Amino acid sequence: MAFWRRKKDEFVSLGLNQAAAEPPAEFATETAPPASAALPVAGEPAEPPETSTPWQTSVLGLDLSIEQLQAREAALEEEFSARFRRAVAATRESLSEKIDTVFAGAKQIDAALLDELEEALIAADIGVPTTLHVPETVRRGISRKEIDDIEKLKQSIKTELLSILQASETHGVASESSVPENIAPYVMMIVGVNGVGKTTTIGKLAQRIKAEGNDVLICAADTFRAAASDQLAIWAERTGVPLIQQKQGTDPAAVLFDSMKAAKARGADVLIVDTAGRLHNKSNLMAELEKMKRVAGREVEGAPHETLLVVDAITGQNGLEQARQFLKVAGVTGIVLTKLDGTAKGGIAVAIAKELGLPIRYAGIGEKVDDLVVFDPEQYVNSLFN
Image (cartoon, rainbow, N blue to C red):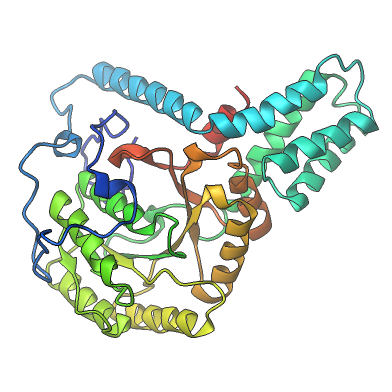
């Protein structure tokens, strides 16, 4: 499936879910690069890597039959499903297996069973409001005699979680295709506190969007932290994506202004904007985000078209509180949920969708470049239970 698609060009994008070689160590965490790391010249493309990558051959199959293309797509979907299942294994163990334990030997659905069900949902960090909502829906189904056995009860839980996730896609920005092609560049502003994997996410997004046939630029507007631009420079060099940067301490809005001008001058399709890893309780830094949004909006209609909040799934409910604060000030339109493979609290995706009404746009399911995937609610729910 296509990772990111706004253009209507007829090309087939395949191979995006195939396993890739382990990335260099500096890709795995947000650490400063070695002093010898070469930095791209501002506004100019960095040299592409010398060795080939899976992304250099992602546009394939133009000489294949429809049947061959469909078979390849099916194989990739199957592989993606297996990888996603592995990524949410810890959450599945916390949620589904505890639910199985609750239901084991149960002859009837009673108040005690529903209480145990609530405890299992809370343990997966689905959140109190969501946890209270799901059993209430189950109780209504029981009263209507729609749920009269354990299997129907489990199916009811799955349906309810899926409906919560799908309902969130009616808010915020659920697809880049909602912005007309003639509006360019498409501006993605990336926000989030330090340590959640923001820089790594930006690099992976740039790589993946470029692989879909788009001209991409990165704006290094985090001028507060010295290592931030250096880390982005490593990604820019490795992926051949131009990086616009200025010296430390420069007004981030000024860097963004220059980046918008550069993106329009070269006819870029996408501009990805890094921002400082702000603490959600620092109102002066939040005001800076507002200024950047105004600058973007003056240069390109509707910009930023997406403001993605990067949330570390491991932080659980603390990540939900971060999302609440950013939503108030930054106008967050969607979530990137990182490190989903490293936690039993992956239920935070449902909590965010239920309590904030924000779609989960992308999920990090590993350390490899292709382990940033489009979040699929149905795939997520099925992986939690099956």
